[in-house]
Image (cartoon, rainbow, N blue to C red; front, side):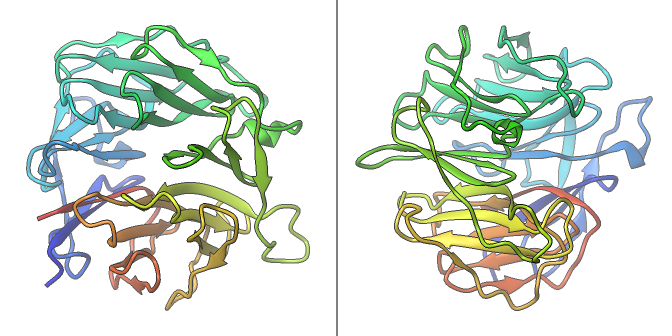
Length: 333
């Protein structure tokens, strides 16, 4: 038996969890607000507490949820996030479980310093609207080198950084000249010599060794001749090995085909993983956990789940298939 639990966040069906690494699945029990309908539950973010793998947070259309039993049951966390705001990103401080950040659409970043009892909206100057409507806060990352530093990625408004736990924010220079370059999907930090900040946008993965002051782009091969770009979504760094990177790739969004791109040399070269079943859409997200760096989970937007137990060298497809998956995570049993 695979001794880890996978959670997937879906659009319209809440959270599903598998306590045996994807062999069997159950739909989680979620306590809905009085006004909410089951079909409204759109989970777009999952975050496992670094201090306790039994505790997981989920961001939804109706607020922030917390599970104390690895995703089997969920209770709503009271917060001031307004009705109609979708939670797109959640992060728990690496050493202090009382510090929680949540990012939304319409754009906003909220912080709690007492485990979710009280919240404040932070003064991060994200634009309220862009050509595609309201931007979305897609990533919140605590800097492993300095836990007072917090990085935020916005779709579509680039990258922001706070060096004082969220009190003040700086908007980083644009990644490139095209508007797509500010459409931030994934954001990670790889420690090393030098340290690297990685960001994915629709046209590839951007890397900075200058704390975001300058960037270089790596684009992936197009899937079809008609494609203008090779679309990229989420990404992950293998825990404990910053040279191993994963990027979710596809022909477009939602796309009809996808790929898991993997690098073992810090992003200098890449290879598409050999998957047992071709993805039915863009690969969207990854889940890793330091308890076992070799276990990696990934999902296509249209419901396929893949697992690897050897650091991404080989993959299996989970038999169960879902509708639209917007978040994935795993935790040790």
